[in-house]
Length: 238
Length: 246
Image (cartoon, rainbow over all chains, first blue to last red; front, side, top):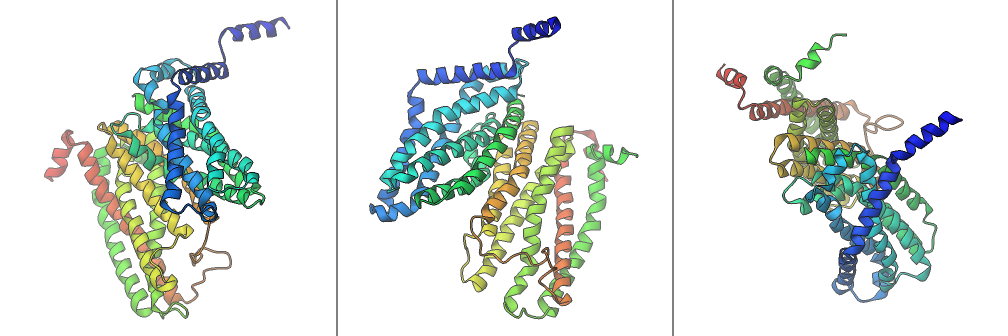
């Protein structure tokens, strides 16, 4: 009994990988809330892209309704992709990322925390705003819940995959274009299953099957992507 | 088991000489098989009962499509070997694979679209296999783009290797998600339950000859590119002067 408590108390002195990850997450959130316009920018971009489609195609709601799932997803993917560039860039510039790598703490967990923070700041707001954009494109009220769920899971998976490409392009001079070229082909399953689920939700049919595939892809991302991102950050810092 | 042969593959001069010796052993059988396969496929094989002479595109299209995937796999495995064991030559192999793979993928897309015109009535359809082939081309382009974005060769090697390995995990997922999305392309004629749909040997044999011929052709081209890549990386080494003098 005594030995167990002794071990427990000695462990309590050193924060676990999860505690450290939690601290990193809170730090990222706090920093972001002090520069609020960076949260608003992806949303504004998303709204602008959504406005372009009716202007370019047609103002008729009946025709917009048919393309609404695709438009929502393409706009959301582009907005989330643009935000990815900032995922590691600031921390790499001021040396925080290097300190993370040198800290002796699991870099995988730290990057997972950073990615989760990034999703809370960009993907989640996008998913919450998307129903309004959906309504503007003629999505029926019963589909709005489905739009939020699919976009929330889809943007999370995209943040995880994008973290790898964002880390890989850290050391390059012109990151933005390359980041899209690397991320989008890998993210095709998200677009396919996400748009399919949204489409089914708008037709008031069960969208469980594509949503589960989307979730499976996100789970794969959770398990493997932070490992790859950590390896990529180490390569970029070499 | 004796692993000396494997460890020697880590030495650039050894690989350079090996590639030079092996190239003709792949190039000549490739030339013979492709010429024989072309003759068998374009002249000897009977026209297809449904597609007429149009089916003869299969003799170029299928080898290209198979190779485009095969080269990506080889590239990913070589990149993984380079990443794990820090083997310079493996990175050189991966780097030499990418431009060949990209051109073969373009060839598969071009022949497929020429075949699609008489059969489907259109050069391009948003069909899963075409689309996943196009995505494969984007992956090759991304890999090459990432390589060229670094000034430092070692970082380019390691970063692009990681991307190739990630791609290796994701390619099957992308492929199947695209397959479930929509389908128009005819199924595989060779590898399917219940045996190949091409029954006559006169049709099948030239196809197999073309497939193996192009695989050997790829091996020969890869060895030639690898020699160039090794020379470029080792241009300051003293063995290069000796190797080029002979």
